[in-house]
Image (cartoon, rainbow, N blue to C red; front, side, top):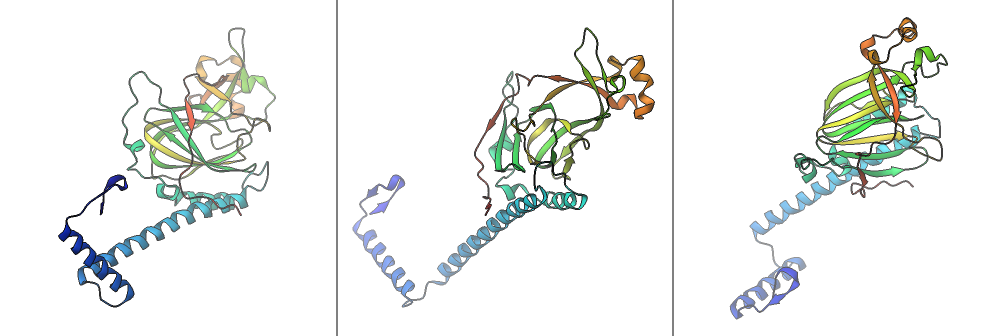
Length: 309
């Protein structure tokens, strides 16, 4: 019988059946060592075996890369409130800088990264997958189609490492001018016409294309509030320590940014000498509800697994 698609068999002609039976017998003798395999078959079999070994070695290397990253994160983020020390930051940055898309099961050949713009008039959906999550840290991947935007948002009490694995995106980020200031004339302005605004300084306003260096933000520095805009379909590997948690008062807050000059006051302008900032690098941030047009969904992680034993 000849097996075809679906496992359905069809009868073989007599001569063909006899030849096939003879070949099967020869294969059994070769397996038993009674008859050497033809030279061509030996070479072909060896090539297949070598390719299989290479694939297994590469799969082991990919798994080892994400496993090593996980183990390093577990050592760095030891509990709530942990802010990595400089040598720990260097360790994680170096590991992430060397990460490749294949280390988490991705490839630029995947359909997602070859898809053009979303249909006219539709908002691109942002997809995320969780590699690992515990109370101390999480490892996630964000997938942004072309033109997708993650609005300006914060990371309360968190340290975040971001590695752009594939694609290209624009990042704009801010820190508060004085996160601990109690002087409203410096850090905020309000009026009957406007909700409370808070003064922030620009940290990053640039385009990044993979491969590029890992970025790091801290609870009060490094651009804790940022916006991502995908120029080309991209994938970002994020390490968040600790992760977002509504129960522990680490919910995500969204903002709109307003040029400083549009709401500057005499008091805030006179106090710029105290914060030593160029007005062009300042903006007022206004807290807003999560934008209705933001569409996000979660998918199962299909890359090399993590062993947390």
